[in-house]
Every structure is written in C-alpha cells, then in structure tokens.
Amino acid sequence: MIPFGKASSCDSCCHQWNSLVAYLLLKTWEFMTNDKEMNESEYTWNDYVIVKKSAPKQFHLGEIGLICGMSEIKFEEIAKEFHAELGDWIYLIKFEDGSSIDVAGRFLEKYPEV
Image 1 (cartoon, rainbow, N blue to C red):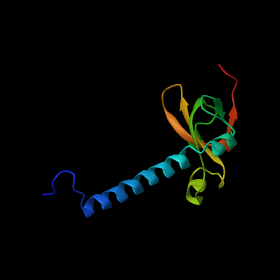
Image 2: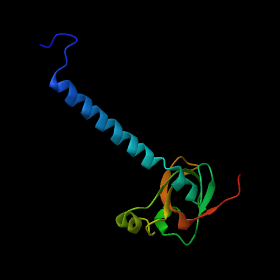
Image 3: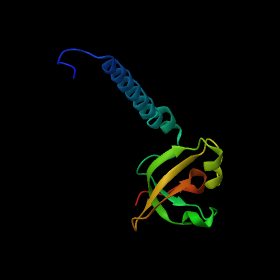
Image 4: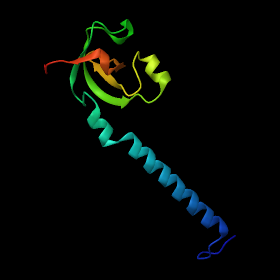
C-alpha cells in the first residue's frame, strides 16, 4: 500500500493515459462538430423538406419532414447505401407521425414553412 502523498510509477502511467483519452475525446468532438463542414450543407436543423418523387422508394417519396441532423458522406459504402456520392450530405428527417429516416440531400428539396 502506498502512503498518501507518495507518487508511484503507476500514477505517471495513469496520468499519461488520462491525457491521451482526453485528447482523443477532444479530437472526436472537433471532428463531429466541425462548423466549416456544417456551413457547407445545403439544409440546416429545423428546415422543412420534401422527399422528391424521383428518390428511391425506401426514402418516403413525397413526404414532408423536418431536418433533425446531418453528416457528410466520407465512405464509399455509405454513399452506395444512400444512392449518393462521396461529399454528399445525409440528413436525418423526422416525419409528422414520429418516424425518421436518413436521406441523401440529392433526394430532398426545401418545403415552405408550414
């Protein structure tokens, strides 16, 4: 047992580990909240949108919803899943019935405020 006030080599290890974890959390937060990227998106939170009728059927064609989130597509697999391209945006759309779905921005258009 280590008396109070005496440091051990484990204390140094723990401090380094905590510093690393804090750094990684900070970098993750910066990546997820990158204001520059958010300003490049076509829509923003609380925008009303309608899903274009030209969208694939699984995207709720013709339905009106509210933007609740967004992210830029950075991986080819995600782009394929949403019939989009790298650099396009995916929007989380919440519908009046409470359901929600992710839709690529290319399948949305602004809807006048209701």
